[in-house]
Length: 124
Image 1 (cartoon, helix red, strand yellow):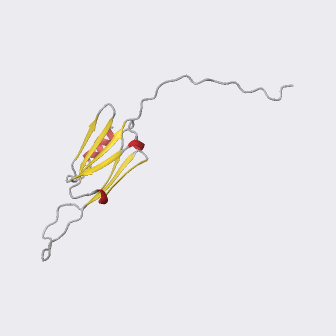
Image 2 (cartoon, rainbow, N blue to C red; image 1 turned 45 degrees about the horizontal axis):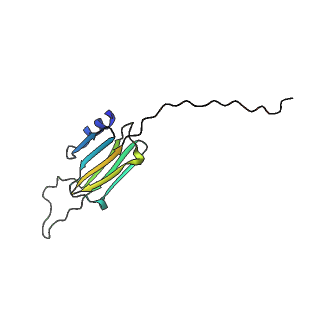
C-alpha cells in the first residue's frame, strides 16, 4: 500500500485525494470538481487504477480568460495495494467527488494438496 500512498503524494497540488482502509477493503476518494459520470473514466488493470476526469467550463458571452488556473483534466495512474481485488472494484461520483471502492482479496487458506501417483502403463 505504500506505493499507492507515495503516488497520491505525487499528484498535482490542485488534486485532493484521501485513502481509507478497513479490514475488508480500501476506498480512494478524489475531488474532481465539475466532473460527471459522463466525463470520468476509471480503469483497473495490471495492478493499477487509471483515472481520467474532465470538466467542461463555459465562458459567458463577451468574456475571455485573463487568468485560468483551474485544471480541466486529470489523468492519474495509481498502483493498487497488493491485497486489493481490482476485479471487485466499484466507482461512484457525486457532486464532483469520486469514490473508488477496492475490496481486499480473501486471504488464502492453507490446504493440503493430494499427491497422486503416475499410472503404470505398458509394464511388462
